[in-house]
Length: 617
Image (cartoon, rainbow, N blue to C red; front, side):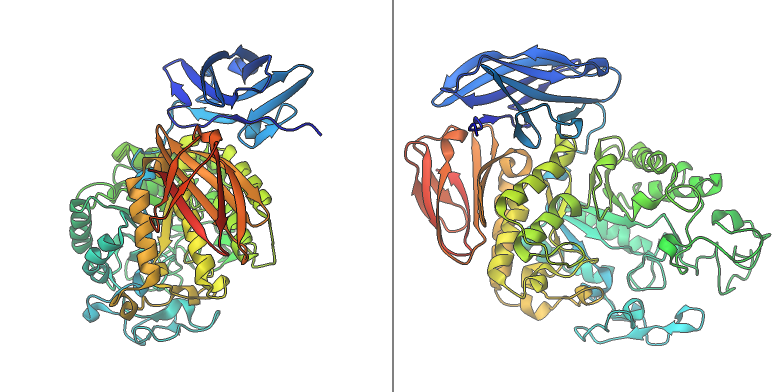
C-alpha cells in the first residue's frame, strides 16, 4: 500500500484569506515529495472548476502552495478541496483528511461569505448554571413545601435542605426545590471571576412551576422564586461591567399546561384558556383535534403542549412582533448576549418539525435584528450539520461533534450509556467527520461540553477517576470550539442521571483550595491567553491506540496537546517538523517542565494517564 504523503491545509487567516469575490488559499506539503501539480477543486455555478496552485516558498522540510478560487455567487457557501497529482496517482485533501479519490461534498472545506457567528463567542469560557441548585441568596423567596402543585392538585412542591440528596429518577425530580436564585448567582460573581469563566449560560429562569423551568407559564417575567425582572437587569449590568456575557435558555417549542393560554386546571379568572374551551381565543395557539381535548404534546409528553407556529399570533408573540419575547430580553434594560434554543430541531408547523429551517432562520433574524452580535445556539443531542451552515444557528450544543466521541474515548460509553470503546484513530475520524461538515467559523463557535443538566456528570461516568477527568478537561480546553463547564465540575461534583446530575453546589468544597479547581482555573487561564486555542487551526500529529497529539497554531503561536489515556507509560515520536519546528525548546504550560526537539521530532515518554499542553519557549 502506498504511503500517504504529508499534506495540510488549515482554515485560520494564514491559510484562508477571503476577498469580496474570491479566496486565497494556502496548502503545505513535504518539500521532498514529488508532486507534478496541485489543483483546488471548487464548484462555481455547481460545475467543477480546477484551479492550479503555484509553488511558493520552501521552509525547511515544508513546501508551500498558493492559489485563488472564486467565491460562489449563487449561494453564500463555497465548497473546496485539493487534488494533488503524483505521476499516475492522485491524492485528495479535504476536511476529513487525505484520500485517494474525490471525496463526497459533505467533507469539503466550507466558507460562508454571508452568515458568520459573532466574533466574541470563540474567546469565551462558558459556565452553565442550573439556578435552583447553584446558591441561595434570598431565602425569603424560596419555594415552600406544599406552596402549590405542579399538576392541578398533584405533585405538591417540596422544599429541601441545601445539599440534601435529590430524589430518585421518576419520583420528585421536577417538584423538589433547594432555593437557588438570581441573588445567589450574583453573589458568586467574584468566585466565578476567580475561576476565570467569562460567560454564563443559565437554564430557564422564566416563570414556571417546576424547578427546571422547561414548562413556561410566563415568558415575560423572571420566576418570582428566582428574583425579579429589575434584579435580573441589575445582575446583567454588573456582569457586563466585569466584561462577562450571559446566555439565556429559550423554551419556545411548547409551554406548560399551566400557561394561561392553555390553562388545563382552569385557574384563569378572565379569558378562558384553550383547554376545555374550543371557543377560547388561545385555542389555535396550540394544536387540538376538533373541539375535544386531544392535543399534541412535545415528544408525546402531555404536560408540555406544543405551540402552533402556523398561527401568526404565536409568531408575533415569540419572534415576529416588535415586542416579541426573543427581542424583549435582548433590549435594554436586560441586554442579554445570547439565546440557547431548547429542542430547536423539533420546532415547526403541525405535529412535528415541518418547515423547521424556516422558523430557525426566523428566530435568528429576530434576534439579530435587535442585536447583530447575538449568539444563536441550538440544542441538538445528535448531528446538527443542517442547522450549522451559517444561515440558521451560530453553534450547537456540540454533543455529536464533541461530547459523544470524547465520552466514547475516555468513558467507553455512548450517549445512551451503552458500552462503546474506541481507539485514538477512531476518535480522530469521528471528530474530523463532525467538524468538516460545517464552516470553519461555526466550528469555532460550537459549544463543547463534557456534561450538562441532561447527562450524567462526566466524573461519575468515569467512576470518579480524577486523572482521566483531567485528560477530558484538557481536551475540552485545547480542542476546536468554545468550552463550557457545568457548574460544580471545578470542585469535582458528582452526579448520576437526571435529576442526580443537578445536585446542589457543595460550597464547603470551595472554601479551601481544591485540586480540581486549580486545574480548571489553570486551563481557563491558558485558553484565555492563547489566540491559537481560541481560533487557531488544528493539526493531528499522532493518533495510535490510547494516545494522541495535536497542535493548535495561529501565526507564530503554537500549542501542542499530548494525551496518554492508557494506564501504562508510553514513548511517542511527535513529528513537529510538520509545524515547521526543527530544533525548538518546548515548555509544558501546566507544570513548566521543558523538552527539546531534535531534527524535527519530539521523542517523549508520557506517564500513564498523563496530559501535557506544550508551547514554544
